[in-house]
Image (cartoon, rainbow, N blue to C red; front, side):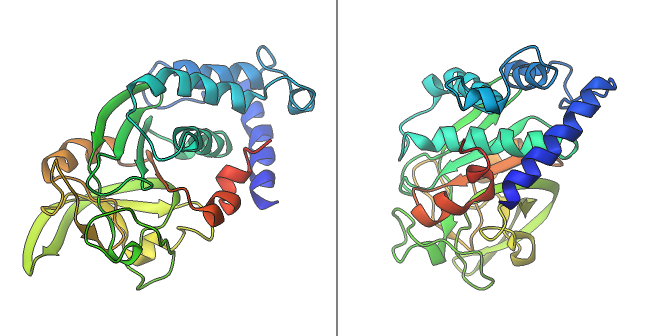
Length: 271
């Protein structure tokens, strides 16, 4: 499996970095408990190798994920699935282990699209301190993902022109001045470019211009539909998106069986 090869190859490279003194860490000085657990494992001082894990002991990835979930769960509101938070954290850590140099800040924007657009379903986590930076808050989904203006999205697509939400893991790039249209009126906001890294499920995001941005059709009480973007309130976007930019991550979840069984960052961690 391609995702497994990514993970195995990157673990070898990461081990070499640790043994030569290179730092495997976000910009802030504190590595945080999740990063500490994985670093200890790679240097041989914590969890056992996966060959041992398969005999009954948890793998390093499972241990690191459990630490994060235990720290965040109590502060997270109701989710559409017990697996939603776990999948977000596991995917984040799998990618970060495989591509440590790509993660340049510790923030993760998580959205549970198994919840309706009238419910708060978005969070921003600090994955180093294992704290909630903000949330829950309302988030828009693509108009191609639902026929009704408000409700639960059920259709997800990576195709250009679909105006649908694409599930999976994204890496953030830069912020920029965003221009949109709502109800026939133009508006200005801040946008955050996203690179989809869940091959086959969201890797057309940059080409489709699917970005995180602020929008006037998202309020504290409900979120209208976007063109596939995980849009948030204007004031919240101005506050959060600069923190997420340039090496943070976004994870868009839904209890969609096709995506759950095929996303490379979910299947890579399913030991």
